[in-house]
Image (cartoon, rainbow, N blue to C red; front, side, top):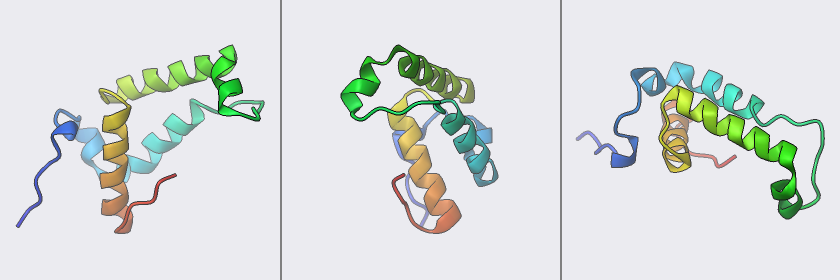
Length: 91
């Protein structure tokens, strides 16, 4: 019996439904956050204007791919990890 599609995934483009595209999408999202510096706390990272610009860039990349929000991205990751590896690992 096929599993029921989580409603949060409704409306994803066909490109994102292909497990072969998972690594490329993840890499592009990860590269949007690459920075030349680190912070000792989350609070410091949130206060950093350069890091906030990187987060905004990641949101733009998410929208370009067709994700509605972060929750949809996380659910998509979960499904792709299961399809590609057989289980889900939080990164």
